[in-house]
Length: 90
Image 1 (cartoon, rainbow, N blue to C red):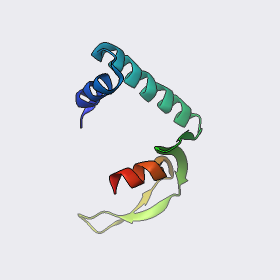
Image 2: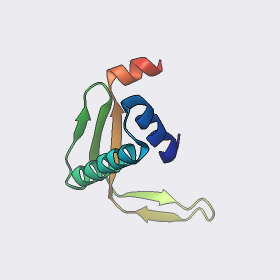
Image 3: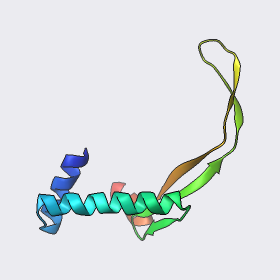
């Protein structure tokens, strides 16, 4: 499902117009991005939670040459599915 299909699905489920559904989705993405940039955790009960964690620096290998390279530490976003979402998929 791409963004346009998600907007259509939101409009159908909520009864909102497509324009309002797009605004709501954009607001959700913006608010989520801002919270994660501040290292906040976002928890949606039954759906899941988004969090930021640190990935340590490590040594990797260039697959073309086999030469060792240093991979820098960075922050990564993690999503953990909630029980209702997991049960609904299974």
